[in-house]
Image 1 (cartoon, rainbow, N blue to C red):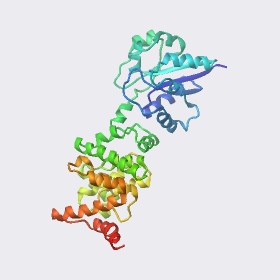
Image 2: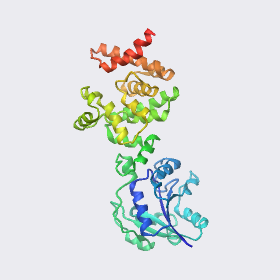
Image 3: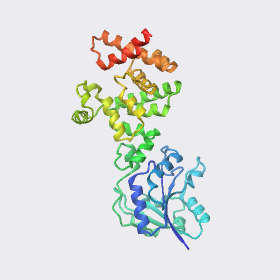
Image 4: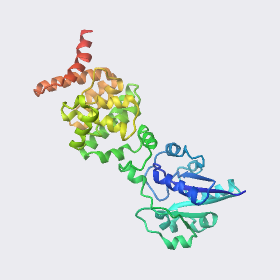
Length: 368
């Protein structure tokens, strides 16, 4: 009996709700037995470095778990990484290895318009049934639809795009996918850029890189340090009214604290609710990065010191950074001493929260 298999190729960098919508619609309308997602190894029309094949497959796994007819076909990922992936060779392989199968290759209107440029486009149209769907912003290319005998799916145009996601629009991504790429440090530099000013973004990237260096030197999880570093100021430039509303709702006990430090709580909130970070160590490190606390983990100290000693702040912090890399506990203690000295020099009041931290890590240590 001939099986009907749909093939949906793409970068899936990352996979989004539009991909899943197309897949589900195709299953129903084409009466498919299965639909296979085929992540490309190298896209012949894109030069941007993609997430690894393993990461893209893992993100696909996040969205196919509830549909047993969805499969991941990794045939292209097993190719030569120095060469571009060509659909023609993929189809020859699949037809050879899966006889008695009718394949339906599914593409969007953006790809239909460029189909003439595909390697062996005419032969592809003879090997499989080509199916196309509407993409927002692209008109149907009826000439190619007719020329290559494509079937057209009657569905609303797909709005989602992986590019928009990497530019900060997370509304078209499943929470499980967001959580995966956040906790693996994927796309964060692209996404975070759209939450803050250029100056704040430069600090964030520099600080996160320093946090990783300090973490590695102290046997602290470098990925946790990177994620906490990239998200530590994610709410720093949140509109004032929105920030005040969230503080009143979720952190009323700190509403009277200076607005300049609200972002340590709000950034933790955004990390948890927008980026789906569940790791308590990361969330705590973000929360403690400005005022610190009397119960600092090594990761907390790492993030706190990386923020204070970021080379981009405009002063020579090489001595302090070296101390942090040698011993983060000593580096953290020195940062507290430096802050008190700086505050006295500038005649600035010190928050009671900080006084408690200083008592715990400096005075008690000296008394001990």
